Image 1 (tube, rainbow, N blue to C red):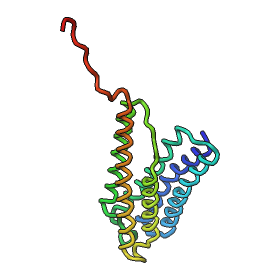
Image 2 (image 1 turned 90 degrees about the vertical axis):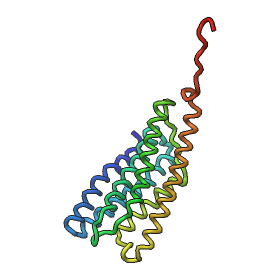
Image 3 (image 1 turned 60 degrees about the vertical axis):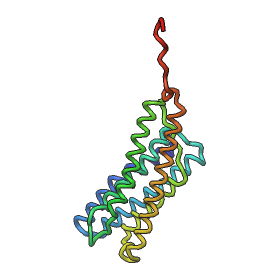
Image 4 (image 1 turned 90 degrees about the horizontal axis):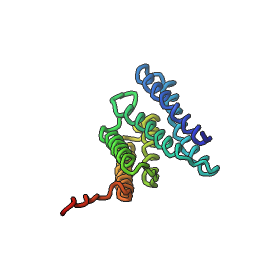
Length: 202
């Protein structure tokens, strides 16, 4: 249990608090809950960079970290995007459903692919891609943008720009993950075609 993994676990533990605070804000309209939820989400997003820096700078890369880190990202972002996909107006803006569908759809495809690779090759090799990291950053910016109510202050065109950009990069990163998974499957001896030896006397 490295320091980097402890920070990642702390990020995961922040997610329920974020969800509860946003739900309380929607229910009561108290700005205290919105600011608490916003600060919690921002802190979890900042810690995403912190645990990565610690892991690289202090040589704390671990197999557990390669699982926990993307898991923390997905839980945080899916929670934020799904919460803001429901109509909470006039308190909060709303993401289009296709935005949530793109993010959740990609994650489902990746999860299914990981299960298939694990069952076929015996081990999944996770290779984070630069486009995937950019998609994550844009998704986080989109959530924070709505929580700050900047979609109302600066116009909905800005939030549309963030969501479209994030969705495009999310889709592209999903394609890269699928291609990487196919390469892992192709390299596995289990995925090779087997030939049945001829029966005796043939």
